Image 1 (cartoon, rainbow, N blue to C red):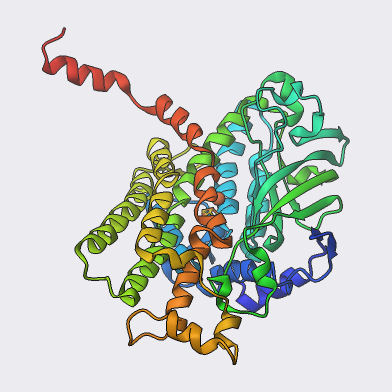
Image 2: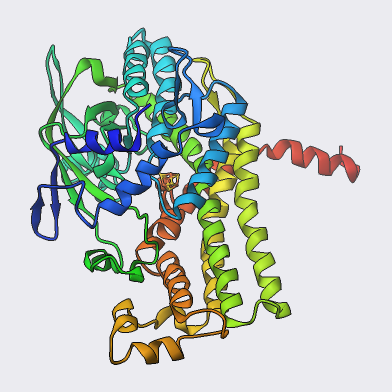
Length: 475
Ligand code: SF4
Ligand code: FE
């Protein structure tokens, strides 16, 4: 396994085309807007010890980072949920490495199923790629969400044929692809980009039914940085005004401008009827992964309890009750994620898959709970959460003494501590940290309606109706 330093050095060797604020970024690793997110991924390397964060490869028998593992038991799935929560609480942000893990697991299931139906050789290719990812301890970006154009139209019906990523040419060496993937979490911190389809496909869409992996610095792959609220605070000289002084996240718009992919890295090509299975499997695995939000919830609850103490209101009954409510809601996410993992079962390829109904329940809770926690954190923190002066004012020789005096709560706690925790709550609920905690909870791994559709499909209504009818004597 790589050390933190080896991971950072490996990123320095990448030659990515990155565009940010009107400029071409030459040194991505040290860029102040990227470094906090790279630190969050680096934490997955630093923490790689013990049987939560590591696993034994079923391919080589070697100990590997769990983010590169394919689940060989329900116990593996449970450890994955535990890892997600642990890392969420450790970093207080998106640590970006889970979608790649979820794509690896999805492909380990679906390539096998495609081969069984079509006599293709995708699974063996995929296993070679997986072994490479495990051996080199790589970060994979899972690229699913296409531009989608007119949402009512299918891929082949769009006015612009590139609204969904597709094959534009092929020859005996490989395929050439064009399109874009949006909201790519941690793209700049990744070694590999794994592309999977974003929706069900029909025969007329078959050029869009593709899956492949390319090294992140492949010619024609272009990264366009996505702005976050208050992101330029990261450009200020390392003040605590960023809120989370160690870690952050980022997303990119990733363009595939006629990118060549050799056949040995193609895991699906035109087997359109398997697009649905890839989407559903990936979605369920990633919906389980949202135990990360329970970890981020731990941070928000910890910050809220702290500001309650600093404001002198921690013993007020309604505040205590709200903190209990925050914990109750937050643990619900974790309960759901653990449940879908415990109920996991093997697929024909041998990889264990979560209980998909429960994974969807997990994620539907995640679309609501963080917003409710943010509301309660604001309630308890008070209006200062949105009006704290900058750190520079606290340090100012003329007015610093006023900031220190009037930003104080209880006498025993310095104003700076109170301002720091307010900044953390601000960031998690309204600032750059909120990108990972709120909209990501809403739309990451699919928007709430996608979970409702899956829940409607997977509940066994017949069993419920039979139970009811029997008990009231209906034949
Ligand atoms: Fe992992 Fe959560 Fe970030 Fe998704 S949102 S990549 S599950 S930390
Ligand atoms: Fe996500």
